[in-house]
Length: 50
Image (cartoon, helix red, strand yellow):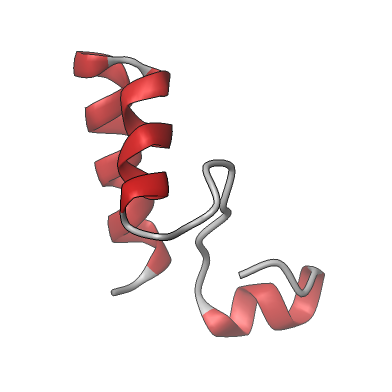
């Protein structure tokens, strides 16, 4: 999934249900709660956080 899609989903969920709900959803999916999503080409140019 492209990072922009996840970022839009994060904004929607955080706005309607709260930031904590989004962080809990990431944790339940086995991801870090403060994970940054981005496209490979963008991350490769700026930082290694994916």
